[in-house]
Length: 391
Image (cartoon, rainbow, N blue to C red; front, side, top):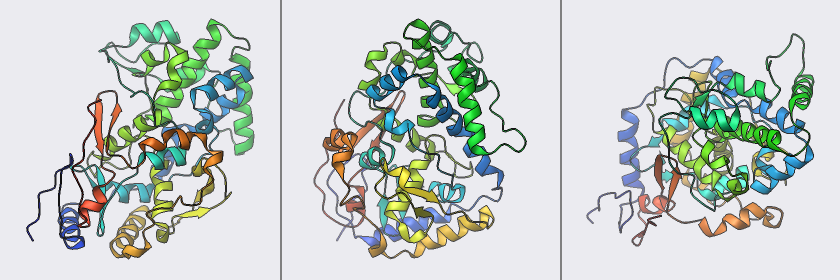
């Protein structure tokens, strides 16, 4: 039977199944190899890029009324997550499997991709609501000065220095002191932040909250590769009563997909890469990269920790790629969330209408398609035409 061409925007297609997937996969792998410049410093670079510990320390210092406001915006479950040690080798191995034409990972058995259900269950962020988009500007100096009382880095820039932003929230020195344990470190940062943050509602408290949200969104949700923090979302934060209306989880996925499309020789990805780790832990458990802990905790990122591997990163990437080449199709977990107690996760119930849908993902100027049913098409299963919404 003749094979229809792959139309990444939907349409009816019939494939020859795993045979086609294997041929496509082998062709892709011929043009990719493992970077020879991976080093142990990549782990600390990824960890510092997120700035997770600093954000958690500032969150713990916020007065109760600010915590309630963040809860109402839908950020509460996400901000209570504990830091997950980066698995640099796994992230790099996944990046080398990314198919930029289809916006999905290409494995020997076909395509797989994190979905909105994975995002909402793993992170607790909202995936329903208004798209994270709007007008972008050449320079954000005026809104940054007016809403944050800070300065951008350069005349035509949307970036603020992360050191200045953290200092405005009370964390002027985020370096570990000699002999300082992690608990002592976090307690010190929290105490420093508590001294600076406004204790009562008002203009100063509103500015504190915007600064904190810029840090959370610019370093965790829509993080960049460098130290500066992006402020493109600042216009959406001016009216704080509407911040919770946006689908920040969907924007996270769009930003991550866009980052995965960069050169495979660029190590790491921008954005919230812990999502990829936990997605693999659930869907490809035979890789053995994660260790289950705290069963029943939600969001599900809290249920896992990274199984540390002392081998060189280059060796780890090679072994992961070899394992991905040989995982039997039957070992792939396609429905890992069966049996989860959704009653304890209201964010899951709100996002359920978007599960299983092919949909456009928006993150400001980035718009990418989420091909939920691409796996069925790659494996040779008949799929009816897919209609993408125009908005």
